[in-house]
Length: 86
Image (tube, one colour):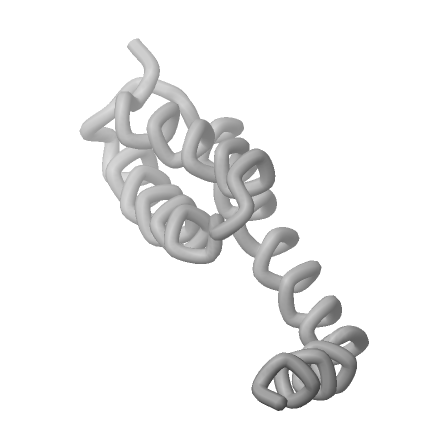
């Protein structure tokens, strides 16, 4: 039987890329993935390790992409907001 928490964290990791503001979903994917890995390692669940690892990787990649995007495009966004104010 697969860990339901591992599958849920995997889905959150995927959805974080689909929706525009997915930061909170990426963080939850990492947290739930880590919790489910601990449960699987302790023997409380039979399997789902791949889903948990995938969730942690997807959440981390999303956060990294968001961070790099903000570093590259952040100054342009600040200028645009300044022009919009007047």
